[in-house]
Each structure stands twice: as structure tokens, then as C-alpha cells.
Length: 190
Image (cartoon, rainbow, N blue to C red; front, side, top):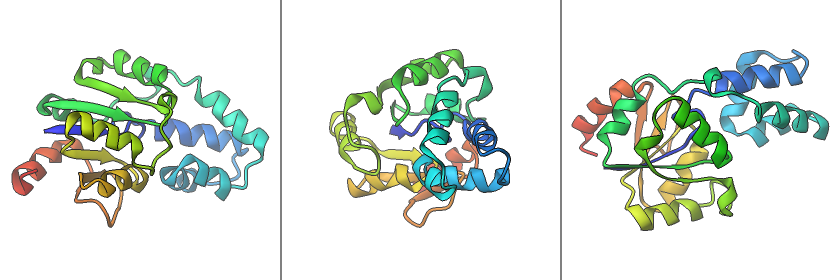
């Protein structure tokens, strides 16, 4: 099985750190749960929802670039799924150096054949161009993401989708934790 992964919130549990950063940038004016919910839609959505100024957005982005790999860990059980897959690739809006830093720090970089990032010039998700490139090159069987934004491009290309820790009407499969992945594979025959 060839798997296309999202990075933030799918492989690495970064959203608690992002939530705390945005909480501080917004001067503790909103509940953390609300910030988390809005970030899970997209960063742009959260910035708009909280009516952030350009200065606040820039402050958040500046601080976000300084997050260290030991501040966010891979999700429990994700390494077993990575080992199971025949091939793994990543499509992320995050910069490649940051992604590689996190993967190396946590000892999982060797599982990935290719990383497509914001620097590669593809339009942002949900545009399917980057997914199309990866699918044509590797014949992707499953795309795993934590937001519909991650699943929409795969659906457009006829690739099976799996929502991780979220709700989605377009997902073919849904996981709350990676240890359930093998039950889904066994039952559903992905």
C-alpha cells in the first residue's frame, strides 16, 4: 500500500503547540478549544475567524517558525503504519527543512520516499496538482489527513481517503488513533 500523508496534525501532533501560540498572540482573549477548532479548518480560516491584524498574523508565523521538534511528537502508533506501507510520501504546506528536521529528530525520516512542500511551486491544497504529481509517480492507494482540506484533492483523483482524528463526510475511512488502522485495513480491505 502506497500512502500519501499530510504532516501537521496527521503525522506529528503539532496543533496543541499551534493552539498555545495563537492563544498568546490573541492575548488570551479566546478559549483554547475554540482556537484549536478553527485551526483545524485551516490557518487562514482561523486568522479570518479571529479577525487578526496583519501584524498578529506575522507574529504568529514568526513564532511558529521557531517551534522545535521536541515540542511536538509523532502520534502514537504512526510508526507501525509507516512500517506497514510499501511506500510513504508527504504533501505539506510546511517548509521542507522544518518537516525534515522533525522527521529526523523523531527517527522516522527513512520511511518517506518523497516530500512535496510549499517550496515546490504547487498550488495550495485543496488544489489537486501536488497530489496528481505524487499519484502519477507512485500510484497512491490512500491519502491520510486530519482536515477535509487534506482529503479533497485525493477525492478529486479517485484516491481512497482516511480522516485522522476528525469528522468528514467525504472520508472513506476514519481513525481516532493509529492502532485502529490495522482493523480498518483488515475489515475494509484497503
